[in-house]
Image: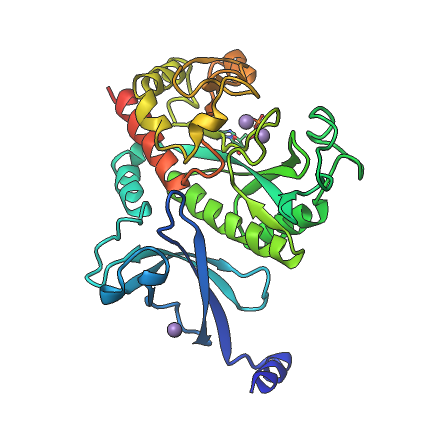
Length: 347
Ligand code: ADP
Ligand code: MN
Ligand code: MN
Ligand code: MN
Ligand code: MN
């Protein structure tokens, strides 16, 4: 049967396509991605679907059915053809949002402040692991200390580039707003950036880009992790610097300062929602500010929030919140920043 379908599609007579339904589960303390495949008749829209919430820490066995509602669909760059990736939000069977559905509260906040035209660019750092150690770490020991790896070139400094290149190509083929990649400070550590885009769009694209990262690395028998401190000791952690602007910030400097001050006034609420294990990463070392001490400054990579030098020169632009962990939920970080900064800016 499978062969017949394939043969039919070679003659250009597709009868079905595959939709990979992707959702965020209820794993504690950090949610994970799940996905499963639905075969659909050609021309059919991806419908509501369901899953067993008792297997994803989202329900008990007695009332296990939860609903997947498509929120963002894009071409599937792995399967190709007419196949698609379908990002979903999780609902109860009465169509109310499940507690693990952080997109729903973001949608409300984004709508409330839509007139301020928020943009985000998120820098996703991550680390490849193979055989239980970071890719490039020698068996039973450590590589040369940090220094030559960031944006490095050559087999002694760069590990996993073939995966990274394929991931970038797949994100582009999916139509995601990915804006760059670079090798990071620790061997096996990398970064990609998504944005600028509005809060819902940047977050949806980030979740799909994460799924494509895991899925692509899987083909190389490598695991990608968003662990914020994958190696203890004198090695950089992994963050998700979150760059932010509103229309007013893109046009003048006073709103830039207002946004920084507002983030300072709400520092603890932000930090405690910026990803599990944030105290272990925001130590005040390795290009971080301590998690319990808020600061902002021009060009300062030791500050909680950095104003890029060009922004100070131009007297307009954006700010970089350097605190979010790599394992932050983009729906949460963008909601908190929009809520805090746009409330202050509308005064
Ligand atoms: P860094 O110098 O901190 O490594 P990157 O180049 O990795 O910076 O990331 C900067 C991010 O900021 C990119 O995702 C970019 O799209 C985003 N960005 C640029 N301009 C704006 C803006 N006006 N508002 C929000 N984000 C922006
Ligand atoms: Mn089953
Ligand atoms: Mn960066
Ligand atoms: Mn980085
Ligand atoms: Mn940065």
